[in-house]
Amino acid sequence: MASSTISVVPLVVDGRRVEAAADEHADVFNPSAGSVICRVPMCGPAEVDDAVRSALAAFERWSQSPAPKRAEVLFRYKAILEDQFEALAGLVSTENGKTLEEGRGDVRRGIEVVDFSCGIAHLGKGETLGQLAEHIDGHTTREPIGVCAGITPFNFPAMVPLWMFPVAIACGNSFVLKPSEKVPLTAVRLAELALEAGLPPGVLNVVHGGRPVVESLCRHPDIASVSFVGSTAVAEQVYRMGCETGKRVQAAGGAKNVMIVMPDAEPDSTIRAVMGAAYGCAGQRCMAGSIVMGVGDAAGPLERRLSSAIDALVVDDTVANPDAQMGPLIDASARDRVARYIDNGQREGARLARDGREKAPSSGFFLRPTLFDEVQPDMSIARDEVFGPLLSMQRPADLDEAIERANRSPYGNGAVIFTSSGAAARRFARGIRCGMVGVNVGVPAPMAAFAFSGWNRSFFGDLHVQGHEGVMFYTRQKIVLSRWDDTYERQQGW
Image (cartoon, rainbow, N blue to C red; front, side, top):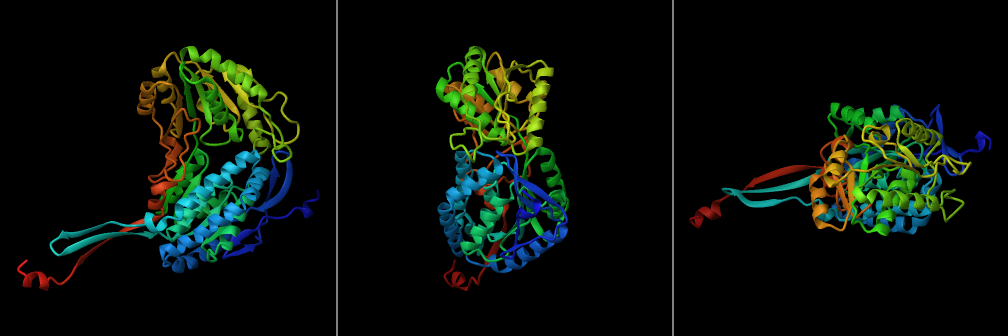
């Protein structure tokens, strides 16, 4: 296909689709086919300025609108998202490579945040205490903070943007979204549907680009907060840049999540959960199960059952084959990076039980699921976030050793245990050092009512996305003390 026939993804600024005057563009792929589906403009500070000006102008009116009125827009938005559910899931699958079922899950988790945000008339309430002191009453309000920015990754094109802007705009803020340049189509469509729901122009804007846009958002004087999801290295930079300019920042980074399988774990449900956690979304998620520990006698049967399940997994084009159970990686560089980790694991002495480079589809950016056994904690495949379909198996002697190994990681997103023992589950939940814990749950990512609570080098900031922490992040508290004439009280002899 000639480049002149490939469409360019628009910006969304001030309620309109805008063609960027960018000199540089990046290709957006269908990862299953390895083909270019469109091009995205790599913008700079000028486009960020335009979007921020639009958001700042819209904030003045939107922030003064009653909370129930803002909720009305979000209720309409949720209805439109439900109506467009299958189309959005298909769009996610096309530009990201997820299976259609995974695309549906991506959109569903995002809609749950919109649903949560519809409760802003209750979530935004303050507190009151009458007679705080003599003749003085006190009450608090939570008020919007201004123009907010969101920088989102490629792995969840719908869910992660919807983690952010519905809560922010429900609280009365305006928003500038910069999606990953690898998956811009879903973000633009989400913004268009928000306008269709009645969101005023300028309340939600979308810009595209790479590092220059990220830095411009983090340093822009008219942006009050930055929300980020991505790698730990970039999360740390975003946190530092945002804080240096006085912004609120929530920056979620990478992870190395551990799954512990005890000898008394229920076999079938455990294998299903481990497979889903390790190889769902081709392992490209910060809650992916990256290390599985077969404790004691659980190790041998676990490795055999995992190997059999890997052999049976259908890895194929997720657009053309509705029966595909795992899709490609996002692009060739991601595929090649994971392949290098397979080389590293072999060099470091781990046993390659299943090699994902074998029998992978030739078109697109595919690797099959990879399984290493007898992995030692100091190996790179045990330390690094691989971000792909590579699972490392370790064989600790007991639960205490498993917890000790898991707690060596500098990350702190998630860890899970599979067991029939309440005592083991309690010991694990209390001893593991991470923010999200699963008991017989493969991926312990919370739903919208709870915060996505990473710890350590998996998160930089104080208030996480989702739940009440999200509402607190996008608002600031005002305390009002009131004293009124006390004539009546004096007349009564009070």
